[in-house]
Length: 328
Image 1: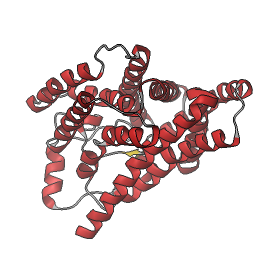
Image 2: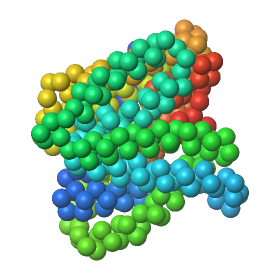
Image 3: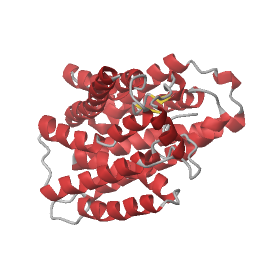
Image 4: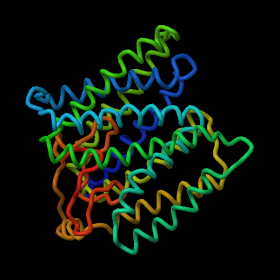
């Protein structure tokens, strides 16, 4: 059991690093094809992988079911473009931290627990510190990071509806396909005006693989080895990993106060996860966990459906799991 847990920790670290290194590699392509060009290639990679895994029967989707799917596709498109543009303007660590505020806000606003209220009160000043006015503050970049957060929040709400309407990954796969299709003209225009070099194209392709396919597959294997709650707590360190990768790969240094703010947000997220949901507590006490199947994973972000992750909007007041970044 200890060996399995250790292997799981190594895999989770690898998954998180893969996601953030993928984003940092994507940034290397920004000077040539810009965030829009990189996002287009990433959306194509995600669409191909998710359609191949999910193999949705598109003809069986009704007009009523297509509406939330189209909304989900729009959220995919805007979320990744706003995030990557924010990374280009304010750096990887700050952009990813701001994006994490979306699911955290949905969870805290939908909770009635005093602990979650305290977590929200702790996060508020940390956000103020991160976005504090300075001579070098890129307000557009900060705003785009918050747009990415808002899109992630809408993603959670839309995905709940899609998860109720369609089985497995049918809805997510269809939305990913639509989003990838929508980026075809965008990618064509960008690449015609800013032809990609071999190195730039390689960066964008590698970013798509590292930020989409690798985390998706690694997370599937990880959740066979560790409890979902433990996985959720570890996922909370992604903003820290993003800041470290940004520093090492892109030389994007942060002030001490920024590091403190990021750690506060990460801690609030981890606390909310650790003490969330009676169902998970019982499961943890029983010493076992249920594996998460393929159809409950999100290839676009490498985040599987967790049994309990309040900061990702997974658990309601009665302790029942709810869908967020993935379908039910």
